[in-house]
Image (tube, rainbow, N blue to C red; front, side, top):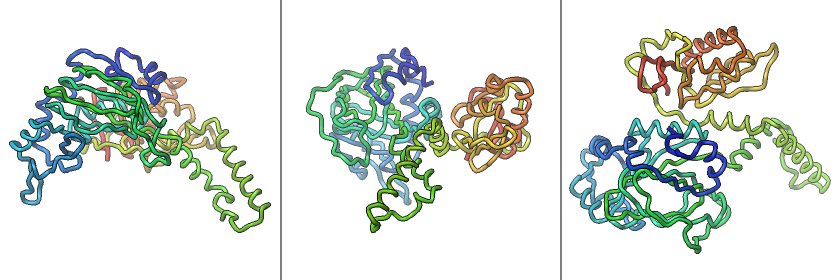
Length: 406
């Protein structure tokens, strides 16, 4: 789905030329994204779900519309007053619903596809407007966003960042842009734009129904790498020791020299970013995934064939540790620690929680049939432990499956 969203641009081109770097406008054909969230499905969400602010809200001209104008508290629950709700929209309010990936199966698959490619937590928010008033004021986001125009049109103004790669809790002020926008145009049905973190933007409906999804991606930053590195360095006595704030000049010099030595040695580790990435991805929260009626009866009877599709159940990616004796490698699947032959690692690294992979595909990364046999045995053990679940189809909503993701 990721490749379909950015087409005709290729994945390699997007990652090399735009991801984290530059604004992108990608024209599309009308209806390209319509199946992600039809208006009828949005109506059902609003009618059938008890949505609380700030997840569900109305904004107009940069200000939140008072919830009391279109909702009531009945029996301790907030209820939507549909007549008043529609009147607010008719007068120019913009509807915002956060985390639509938790409410719509197709939007969830969209978020999972982005997570699988970009290796970062992803959620999807909804914006709908009818008149000409903006919802939110000119602003920048502390995450990367991709806007998919589902229906109608919207007028966008996009400005270059006034501070590169700003953070939500930043040490420097991010000044408001004074230059002309880099893009001032209409986003039409089927179009998409990409906004790296820090790019300013504001959007206006054009007096017609407009619906778009904002894919919000939270990639790791250099700050995350350094914080992780500091935690790893805590194994050294000198890092845990008191800083010599009341020591002599020579003590301070020796102390700082030793810290510099430890940090320099750590940064020269060729596998540093790969190790960070493994642990970063393992901490990405999993979405609930329950497959009834088969899961309870087949949890303890997994059948692993070459056509079985595997998905991790307890962690987003496996975390591999340093090799141990006898050609073995230890790894963690959530809270479960296990070991395997080193030659199985290239196949296991392709397992993820977001996209199922067939055993046949995994075996293409192995040297011989004996390795494939050992892989199937290991996968069966992991299934019995609840670390993976299996399905007999690559379609995540088809076929018989084993296991439940927490």
